[in-house]
Length: 130
Image 1: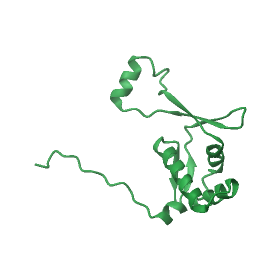
Image 2: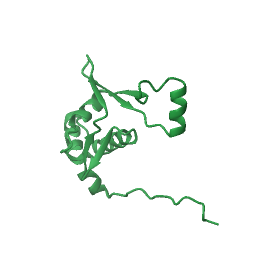
Image 3: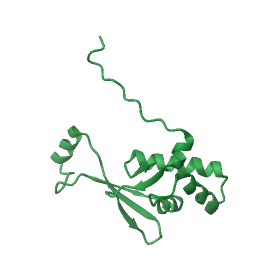
Image 4: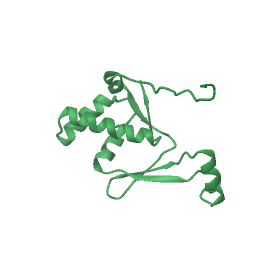
C-alpha cells in the first residue's frame, strides 16, 4: 500500500558546465561584519522546524520575535571568496581568480570554490542564479 507514502522529490540536477555558469549571490538576511584582522564574520538566522521553534521560544532563545542567530567566521580564503560574490561573476570566473591569487591548479580551485559555495548554500547564506 503506497497510498500514504510521501513521494520523494528529486533535486534539480545541473551539468558541470551549467553549474559553473551560475552566479552566486549573498542572502540579504546575512549580516556581514569585517573584523580588525580583515576577516569576515557572518551572522545569519537559524531556520528551525516549527516544533523546535516552539521549544526555543519556551526556553527564551527566541528573543523579541527574531529567530536565534548563528555566527560563522571565515578564514582568509573564505573572506576572499565571499568578497568575489557580487551576483554577476560566474562560479568559473571566481574559481579562476581564486586560482590566480593562491597559485592553485585551476581544477583544484574549481573543486574548492564549489565545495565552499555548496556549504554556504546548505546554510542558506548564498543563492545561485543562472
